[in-house]
Amino acid sequence: MSYDIKYEHINNMVVFANDVSISKMDYDALSRLKSFATCEPSFIWTELLRLGENQDTLEINFFKATFKRKLKALETLRDSKHFEMETREVLIRNKVKIQLKLTNITSDFKSIIPMI
Image 1 (cartoon, rainbow, N blue to C red):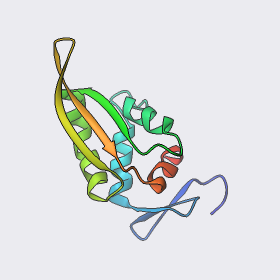
Image 2 (cartoon, rainbow, N blue to C red):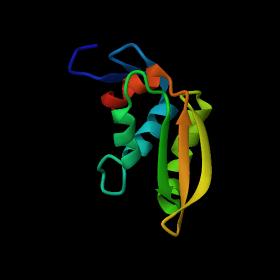
Image 3 (cartoon, rainbow, N blue to C red):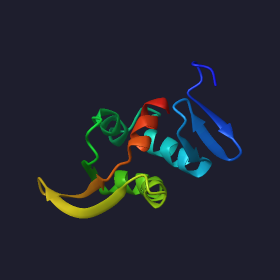
């Protein structure tokens, strides 16, 4: 793999330049998680990019509609054991929001986020 290429699709897997491999389904979920209606990186994506090397927990509050659009992608990645996920409804400034908490985020998962 050349240095310009960040990943390759090989046999229904996506292999990254740092030798981390994920399934095509996980890659599609990451792409959905990254994109927003405007094709700009979503808020959760920018927060994932900010995670430090020694951090493995992320907590974000979503409006229900925004969370609903990201839920399937998050469930796919959770089921593939890239992290553990907890959700709960919270009241913030008289608005019901969904609090998402990702824990035990794997270092391999964090390492591929900047490459997508």
